[in-house]
Length: 214
Image (cartoon, rainbow, N blue to C red; front, top):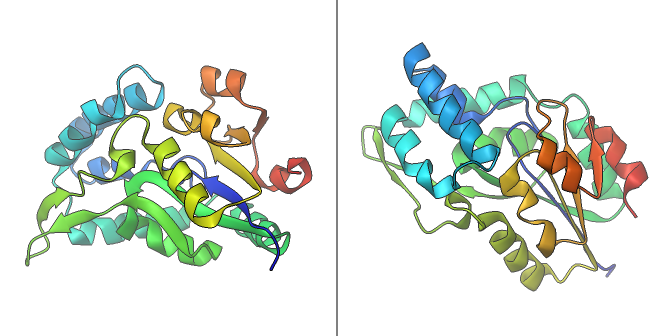
């Protein structure tokens, strides 16, 4: 059996153009969207810790099970144009591909299936019998700052890869830099100056990855 090489992708503003939480807010109207977008940007730019906004955004939105299905369709409509071919090429080259996200598993699943990614490390939402919001998995690491490196370290213990790479656009992704052999920043949808400055490489299209990975 060949040694495993592990590549972890952020989802929002990386594999897809959207931020899922902001699209959930958009369903509630412009005032809610403006409020939630600002909270998201503050967290992704590193001005506030993720945990300071995570629960609050969900409380403001109150997403339903049906809302998550809507966002799942939006992820597919806004998939990064080269993502499917890039994931296929990486898998053919022996990489194990995992999505590591602060987003929501049920919404990301259709995109993961489209891309051919079996494993999602993201947050489970809880709903009541009528499909109304009833909470989230508060123990999952990506609900807080420092969560993505925690997930990556767990994956490394499980898979024992010979090489580990993280690809993402935000500060929560950059936090994983000490846990990986190479952090690659992504800027097709948003360029965050600190992420760009501290990345081993910075790309604007996912199809740049195969030629720059060892």
